[in-house]
Length: 263
Image (tube, rainbow, N blue to C red; front, side, top):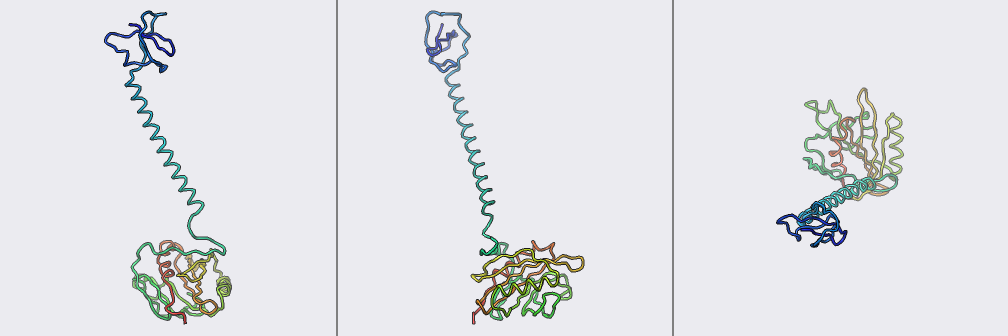
């Protein structure tokens, strides 16, 4: 039996037990019975309609997968560029920010006295000998804690923090004196930024220096508790190689620091 495409005019031979309704021309045209062939007929190369539908479904699935992948890539690129443009809420210059909180749930104790309170690592000990100019300069702090190194006690202290109250009239004056002091003993300022500590204006200054064959790094935070009259410095010192590991403990001290009263 001869069949013909109404669209392109091609003629085909329909085999025994084959139904016209099951086939469609390669060009997509509709097939119909043709009583007489106008030219030698071609072997039937048409596709079954069921196969065509199956192909379309497969293409649809592939398109959905491609769209999903494209959306995923777009989301990743948006996230990456967002991080690049807005890395965090830390800025430099005259801007203000809060340094990170304590996300590591460090075991801690709370100090309350001398008109202030703060948290410190539970396994750190209070330093009894506060006269140590080589450790923190003049004047002496009124409070200091250190990380124990074996059974050496205060004979061998490398990681510690101290708190001093400074008799100055402004943060600018406090920092001017401090920069001069560290320069006079060949210490190097690494960075400086404005921050807030529990709503109080403060400046974070990081410095480094070498003692013998060991490099040290310090996070110092200069806090204005009462503008024009009450200023504190928290100095946090550690071997430079251990700075990143110890920083969360220092930040815990700084972020929990607040006055008990403002008299």
